[in-house]
Length: 251
Image (tube, rainbow, N blue to C red; front, side):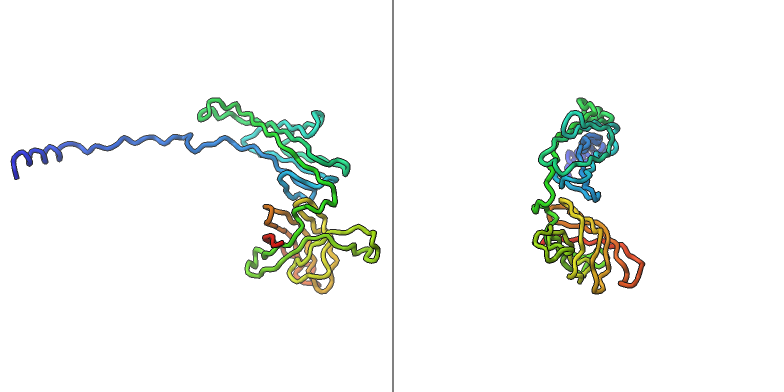
């Protein structure tokens, strides 16, 4: 090996390794400001994004922390609230689009957002539909299973049918029904309290060994149904078990 080559290798070995300096992570890189939203709850306590049946109590709910104060205006300027959650009773005659404004305050996050003032405003609309409007998305057939028996699939149906109290009176109003909960209870059906996106299973008319469920159901998306209910262990037992049905729309 030549002397010049040996000297070059020696110098290379003698020099300390050159490393890039560690760059500190940016604490603001993934940080986002809170997203202000409103949750509407129909009379059964079931959520609905922006549309409900009129003629019922409707709940209004804003996010909790980091928000610390709230200013609501529902419809006219006279109808204001300062609570995080409250409810309004809409009479049957009130239908259409109701403007809703929410101003919520939180501690400003100026370390990462220098112009943040901690005040968020949301303008949205609640639509009140008249009772009996058949476009309610809760109507339909949903195939699924109880979460404790995911392979035992069946289909439940929510529909408008003849009045069981006055079956021979053509002028009697139609009623809402839930069929096949629990599995196999095809006839008779259960009468239900209907909401735009939810149901309240409040009375059963079954015989034939059906297990008399009571509870509530609601759409978690346009085509996904969740029913939370209590079911008797047998037709002669007073003991119940809690079950949850999850289904997807098939019609």
